Amino acid sequence: MCGITGWVDWTRDLSYETPIVQSMGDALCSRGPDAEGLWVTSHAVFAHRRLIVVDPDGGLQPMTRTFGERAYTIVYNGELYNTEDIRRELVSLGYHFEGYSDTEVLLVSYVAWGPQCVEKLNGIFAFAIWDDANQRLFMGRDRLGVKPLFISRVGQGIIFGSEIKALLRHPAIEPVITEEGLAEIFSMGPARTPGHGVFEQVEELLPGHILIGSPDGMKMQSYWKLQSYEHEDSLDTTVERVRELMVDIVERQLISDVPIATFLSGGLDSSVVSAIAARYFKRTGRDALHTYAIEFKDMEKHFTANAFQKSLDGPWAEKISKFIGSVHHRVIFDTPDLAEHLLHPLHTRDLPGMADIDTSLFLFCKRVKEDVTVALSGEAADEVFGGYPWFHREDALKADTFPWSLRLHERMGIMSDELKQRIKPHEYVRERYLQALSEVPKLPGENARDARVREIGYLSITRFMPTLLDRKDRMSMGSGLEVRVPFCDHRLVEYVFNIPWSMKTVGNEVKGILRKAMEGYLPDDALYRKKSPYPSTPNPAYLALVREKALAVVNDPSSPILPFIDPSSVRALAQMSYSPTEHRPWFGQIMGTAQMFHYLYETNEWMKQYSVRVK
Image 1 (cartoon, rainbow, N blue to C red):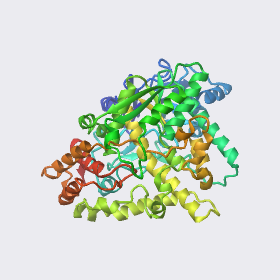
Image 2: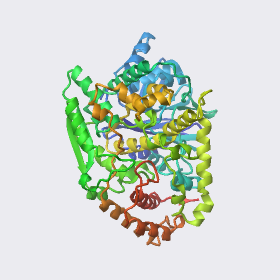
Image 3: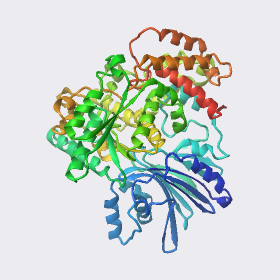
Image 4: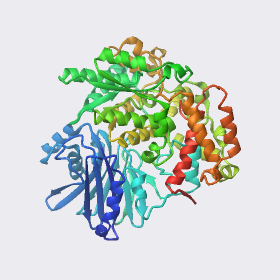
């Protein structure tokens, strides 16, 4: 895993602009603490920061390979899980390799197959290739958008980077937001509309898309999208296919030249990944798998079960670790730890994010990085298999909006009248929702309820999941840790998307098909335990901390957020928060009142620290 950035312009000599691109690369140093590289030619300059995972000597970047008189240069962030399959095919075509890195395989695959090379790739990736003979730029991003890639069109050229901060190092890109950026932050956030970079000049290369640039112009096009088709496999065949896919996916993702571990929360998803990994370790003669779980101090004292969190995960993680034979590590944090690092996620995301959920994940990844360089996570299983409450709750299924954000009217309550008039929150969210629905691939003959569940699945995969993938990428890479996400393998996503809902919930179980497929890999009571989301601290000290931060913001006349919020409503919310209320999140499953205070505080700091100018 790495950080990539660069500047291409066909109308000017960039060889004199290397300090700018060097600075852009320096902004990504946490993504690649092990090595750095800079490559310069007349119309293109690439910078790279490397986290060494495979082929330490042969995977140096930017990487240039010459075939005849034609030279090609790549900067690449990601991992290919079918590297050896592609290498064998390329060798059969007469190509030779200097090392064994997936970087070289990807570059040679472009030489052999051109833009169609992305269709052969199984992995997570964002890359840029400069074809010197044709003066052509080719960029690609993985199908689900696990790896980020932001772009900005400047003059006749393009600037790109793994993170927004790299682009903001370029003097031509200013931290300006318009009505659209305000709407993304205050109405959609911490989610973000695909393709939008919030800042006026920043875009995002969409997942499953490529970009081709030349002196004649630039074009982006899709090479992959979800399709709907009739599922013809029987239940037994479907169970077997899901099991085969899961085992193949996890085992492919255990390839590494550096220490590798898994996250193990005690929930179904991370337990499945860890169980498969532990079996593979034993079968291949490796030492015992190391597993890691995040916990909060005094969780038992402050925890109250609710519709979204049924039980504590910690004891289950211990039980599963013993069952699979892993060496388990409990990583425990307290409110002072969160307080000390409250704003660190802002500098890894470059945008307001998921409050304490970001902070704790950053600290967790930082701790795991002390022992290993790569970890596998259970992220995305709920989007793929339909695990979230909004797949099952009637109010969410019937809601004519994004089901993880049903309380927009309450968010609007703390917006200023000026902001509401300017961004028209209901209309903006409605437009984004209808845009997403228009993309859903319909299945002819499907009944109304199944069609709606298909819509919810598509929305979850393409609109909610990117928020969590952003979080996982930035918090892990901000710690120099590579985290892989087996449930984002496109083969699994394509197959499970079309399994009928009655089969997905076989046995009347949430994610029933996954549970049935993994029988024998986990104890039955753990396998059929009700899910619990990523832990958010229930400690009232955290609520008190962020409430105080939010009130300090509204009481400070210099706070840049003031024109966009109603201070009296924020104070009223603060007063209400002293009384115990039912936990009803305003975003996702666990972002409640405390996280709203945190989000307001973080947004104000974002506007200050990034010198955000509202146009």
